[in-house]
Length: 336
Image (cartoon, rainbow, N blue to C red; front, side, top):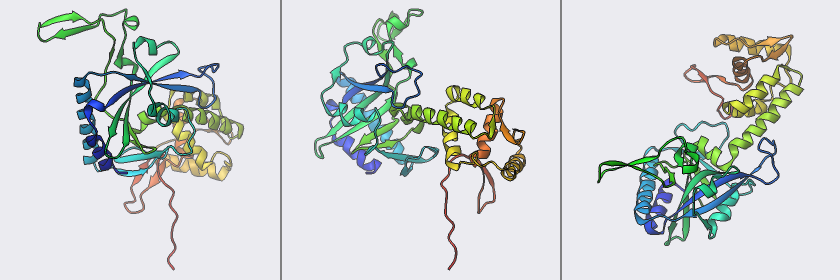
């Protein structure tokens, strides 16, 4: 399915039939927040009633956003954890993929869900407002289109959580500032991903990964890879790397690339010297000690991951140097 097809489905729906849902995230019962098990979160869907004005606004905004994306002529490619999102639209089929968020799209959104009576009731110490979702139903094709957008904590306003400030609203009719005592959720004009026919169409890759829980999965994978690197005996000071995994999500995917390459497992003196030479060529100094990779600060981690992750690249045609962890391995073809 193309974005043009998705746009036709949305346009074929009626604004008054569109639905707005909030998705919350909570830790599974009996699981510690810092636990390293995969799939430790539960997601729950709530429907929230909207007046006609809100429905019309969300309907028109969604059409405008999809049209803007279509006009960018993004290349549609299969999702890959290491690919950047420059001028690409990723597809992510959920068949045979088992993770907590799949229950949201395959089960909860397909039936009548609990309605929101209070934002405060679904934003507790154990449950957080995670994303919002719009549903559009095309009566002609009998298909549903769902759009998702990540909700940031700053977008939610609840009296109990804002005792240190006054929430006010400027009334343009009375030209007065009035006290706002209601709960608020800001819904912006953006779409992170679209779900239709068992496939996600990913517009904002990082937010999509947050929404469905892939970012948390990559974090756990990164911790395991860091342990493998330490246990290989070829890395000194791996504890610093483990610390950074918690504070710098940007290194999670870099570690996954390093694991794919596996260069740290057979780190011979010859390979180490080659890595030093390549790093030096681009102004970096590979930190080593006693014939091993040495980590004692964040900069060392950055250089080591670049070296192990094939960050330094040369364009075959332009002969220009590039720096990126992304890239698909190609096989050369010999002339017959």
